[in-house]
Image (cartoon, rainbow, N blue to C red):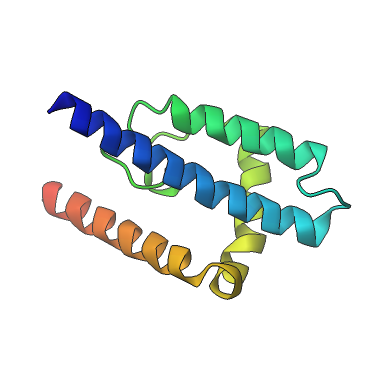
Length: 118
């Protein structure tokens, strides 16, 4: 039973890392010089991967944007916000299914939390 839960969490982590990497690469491609990802964006990817791998709330949250605890440093939070602001609207053209899934998961998470808080 615990092995199945760990496997589910590992899949969730990899999916979250994949989405963030895609968004960072999209941002880098549109804003920085080649190669993609550049050094700065590679560092951001490594930072995000580390945070996702070590997230204590991974079992209950969907994405970092839905988490009540923001563990990113101020500098990295500002960087990821720029990435999300740029890449978010462009994801519909590059990865529409991921964008739809992200929206669905976020709405589902908010509905569950709204029902448990009442």
